[in-house]
Image (cartoon, rainbow, N blue to C red; front, top):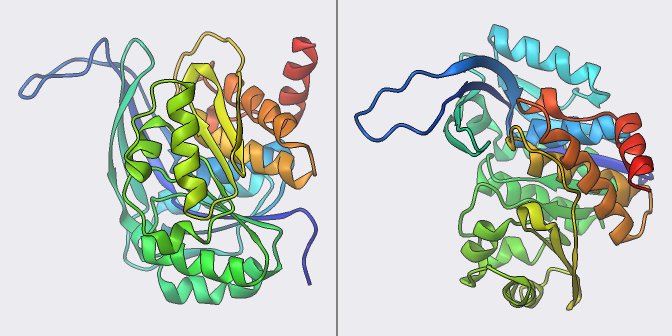
Length: 309
């Protein structure tokens, strides 16, 4: 039996170690930074938090280590309105870590240690079969083992659960996996990786979207940074502009967009309206530092949209 509006997010959990720098160091160079902070992140957790805070009925399939960080992350996720029963604690493993440098322009470079995220095995996916089958939608990214992402997509597809994939970080994906996806949300880099088409303007985005439709994906949303998104459904595409704000830190902007988008779609909003809601959530997030600390709550998103008129 389907739970109406139920979202399952499958993905990664990281502790982000963030350091602000004037500019990124060159090889062999040491630079002194400022505002060091540790914040909870990981694409999966960020998207789960964005969905939870924006009002979704959400459960999260993920792994933490059996360490202090893992315990703190799980406690935090619960306060973000997320069902953490499907989060496994992996014995003898550390919770995932991301080392992040942010420059003056708000751009970032990131190195990741997967840790417990690598333990999101096929057996753990199989253990959550009923949860995935009973959901309305499944949202995934690519910081988890790709064979597990494929297995979860298969379960979802067989049970008419919408499969949404944020194909980040960028990598090549099999046509087998792409054929199971209903909604895909690549940025320009990820779209190029998947299609071979360099996305520099709207006509490039339209061509990349067509290439993804040809692989069996009905809804393609290519995120274009400050230019908004290119949204294409079965070949009918258009650009949906975002909101102009002063960006402080873009770390979880895409994740916030994805989590909020799925919340709005599960509330049966029209696609353009859902994208506008997601744009608003992401716009708020980039004005704040850190990954999860920057993610807005529903009342903040609604208020932002009211002010836009």
